[in-house]
Image (tube, rainbow, N blue to C red; front, side, top):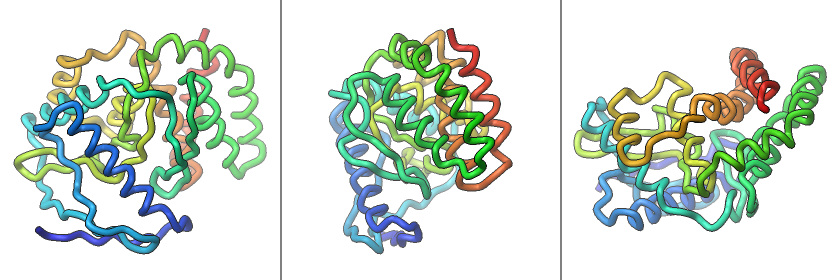
Length: 253
């Protein structure tokens, strides 16, 4: 079996260790809902502060069949209820720290540890104050709105854009997770942020567990977290996405 070695180029010594833990959690979650799950997760052979050694994937182009397999498997993973929102330990999403903890209420967790945390990281004082004011004024209503529209805590990949789903001709693979327990539609929303996974993926997902009527609005709210993270990491190209998301927050009733 070929081995892929990933080096730790982040400022966080435990980044690869947390990634390995996320891969293990995804693997066990998929096996629990379907011992013959067709979604695969790379096996980890060794991990320490500097290096992650794991199963190599010979990736190729996707197909409608592979995308449907991914959509169905993801929905089945999401269907398994989890005991709380968040995660027992902090982890990372890309080059950013992700703050977790155990929470009974989804809305409070998402507003505090996803949106609020990223807003506090904004280096531009005026912009940070502008976004913080919107978040402060909408927080109570937003938390209640999200609580009322989240069916259960589900295990999420957490960073499910097209670059983190690979296909080897036989099955889809999930890599680079930023796992936590949350609203399953946060995972689906992320898949649409950079172009989407194709109609076959969403049709197969909806056949197992249809997205809610509130999904289009939730998609804007949940992807605001990712736009803020990308803005903080990469700059102004993501500012318009942040502003669009905060415009949605201001209209929540």
